[in-house]
Image 1 (cartoon, one colour):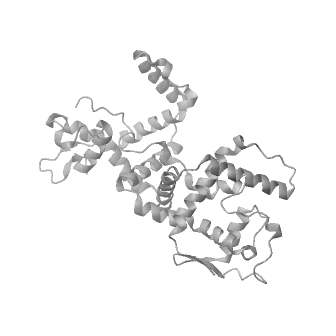
Image 2 (cartoon, rainbow, N blue to C red):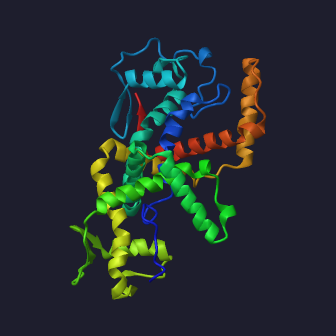
Image 3 (cartoon, one colour):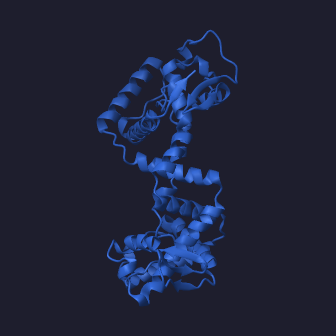
Amino acid sequence: MKKLVIAIGLCAGLLGESASADALKNVLSNKLKQHDEMPGMVNLDALEAAKPVKPRSRPAKTVVATVNGTKIIKKDADAYLSKRTKGQVSDFDLLPKKQRLALIKEMSLPILIANGAKKELSEVEKEAVLSRAWMSKQAAEANVTDAQIEAAYEKIKAQAKAQSALSQVPPLEAIKDRIKMQIVEQQVVGQLMQGAQVRVAEDTDGIAGYVGMMAISVDDVNNALQAMTKGKATWATVPPRDKARVLQMVAPSKFIALAAKNGLTQEEQNNALSNYWMQKNLSQIDVTDAEAKKRYEKIKKMKKRSKSKKKLPDYATLEKSLKMQIANEKFIEQVTKKAKIKLK
């Protein structure tokens, strides 16, 4: 059990850096800033030539669509359309039916994604995501000096040198943010754990022990041990002399999880879970080279028809962005596939 050593911080029981990536903004916000010559999630090409599908626009409060029963009014659809087209088109009723449906699918994403995250993420994932979101918030507000970061970096170099691995240490600028996060984690954990007494439960009944007034379940310990020892140890196999130490290693993540639950607003929690769930699903979507090249050829044809004088970047330059766009579109299709979306 002496090998059960873990650096104080979120490393135990928390997910990787990907959990903090703001994937929802990448799809719903960044797409509004895409290159002018690249199609977005909704193909709104040649809108200037589109003819109104109705003789006149409907009033602002008219319900233009429903998503799983939730009403979307024309005023909101117009505002979203204006952002999507950078002000070029601002009347939802002027879009052809296919484009109106695609736009409503985009508008429905936040609700559908939040519901998907709530249903599909495990409690362990939710706890880890919210903990990291809360810690990121603490790091943004923390006053960590350059001197503290440099001192921590020199300590890392010294440890690496002692192990003849100094050449493997990245430059300070490359890991500066991670070092800052570690310092903040140490400070936060120190505050949360201050004065907390560790006590192993005598009659477990599903409880491994207590740190202060917080009960830590056997499941909590086993989940942490699974991550730390890759399944080689469980609470049942931990020698009695090491149980208190194991509880002390598990406790920080539980204290942080509780602080996150109380310290994040409901909106912040929903956004964090939605972002993680979305990124998790996007990472599983495959986009082939053939699909990306087909999209590029489509863009070339569109550019030729528009007689634009702007130079189109070559395929290699746009390949990553094209694949990301296609993955986003596939994701939207997956999320909205089972949703009951009706145009009015």
